[in-house]
Amino acid sequence: MVAATARIVLKSAREIELMRAAGRVVHRVLEELGRMVRPGVTTAELDARAEEIVRESGGIALFKGVRHPQARFPFPACICASVNEEVVHGIPKDRPLRPGDIISVDCGVRLKGYCGDAARTFPVGAVSPDVQRLLDVTREVLAIAIREIQPGRRWREVARLMQRRAEEDGFGVVREFCGHGIGQQMHELPNVPNYVDRQRNGDFELRPGTTLAVEPMVTAGRADVVLADDSGWTVVTRDRSRAAHFEDTVAVTESGVDVLTDGR
Image (cartoon, rainbow, N blue to C red; front, side):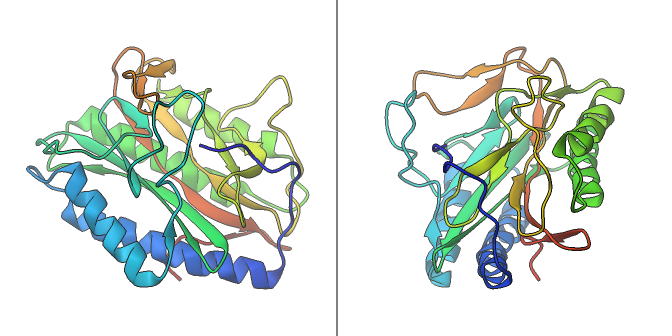
């Protein structure tokens, strides 16, 4: 949503704990909204509850008020709520969820100067086996990334495994959007693609103190995306196939990885 800072900033143990505190708030939002998701609930209602939780925590909603060169207005909500073919940046509205829908909720919080960012895709009631497989595989792609992060490794090695897992089930991996570094700013370097970037713009060494928002975006059809309307925000699949989005904020440690948005 915003330009990245100019270099990869390694975080101290103290900074990582501050990011974990922000991540706890994000986790609480996603857990609460996951319990609320059901037919008839509107995405505006989900956003209102998210804003209450963030305010009660003393945090700041990262997304609200963010500007983008392509957008006609600043982002107006606390969460991104993307339904069915909407991939990312869906604007909450008075749209009731229907049985069989899926909704991706993305939440970012700044607390005491440090950020946490995570996303989950929830089924609305019962969904078809194909849709459930999309959710399961996308969740697994994120789990693969978390499992494979090791200090000294190159990101492209992790991204290759993420891409392979999604594509072996016939799913698409979105190229136009990717994960990012995170810390005092919501978007920092490096870019964190969910596929092998053959131009090498998305490769870097995983070093202790590197903090990343890893967020696979996987489609049931082709990977191509477009803007949905003239707002300049909501991104949808070009073929209108469904999309899933899972994200966690993580820190690279001396021995592996530490998930900062798992509620600990």
